[in-house]
Image 1 (spheres, rainbow, N blue to C red):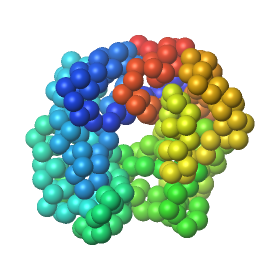
Image 2 (spheres, rainbow, N blue to C red):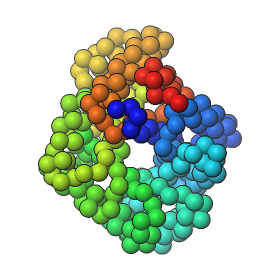
Image 3 (cartoon, rainbow, N blue to C red):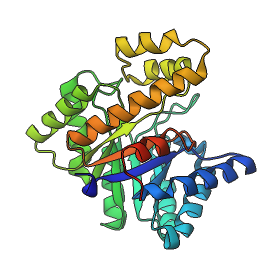
Length: 283
């Protein structure tokens, strides 16, 4: 089962020389996982565009020796067709062949959504402009997108992205495996056949995770939330517990037959590396 399992890792674009050096070190330390690609997040409306571009070009330049491709996130809200076209041209010029295509959130203070309202419109534009040059990853929400009116509407929106030309999906992180499995089952019944790869989020700071989860609609199961609250300021014990929890969680995902694993690294080596070492996924 694990022989066919793909692994990918996500980073946010560093803003300082120290951050750039740290990201390079983390990438090198994670290379034994033999990731299929490293993705780099992207702020809508260009808020981190330059940093993302620099990071993915750096990753792609190393790919000749590492075999690990770069995958820039591309958020379309607040963007124009001309701006996206220019980015696609730049990606192609730097031998980037994979994109994570997203709608993104409208930046604060910006009222005009630009030429693209939804991710499926961006995917359709990419396909019309570049054909099959890019492998396109999209987002999936096992616990329903926080802005969706219903689970059924959310599934319809996901199918539009697939029909527009998506090759694979990376999920929002979750801590309820049943939610993921049920979502995959519903997708299969709807005729969606692309791989749906679970996203795995480390737990380094509970209060930070709780705020983020409340905002993005990712549920922290009540038992897990209460358990994490018990650690208070005891960071060492919390990280030991969450490492055990995430290792078991990831193992159960693998045993359920997932096509791959996507780790939200938060630009850190652990717990991603340790989880994979414990599960025998390092090369």
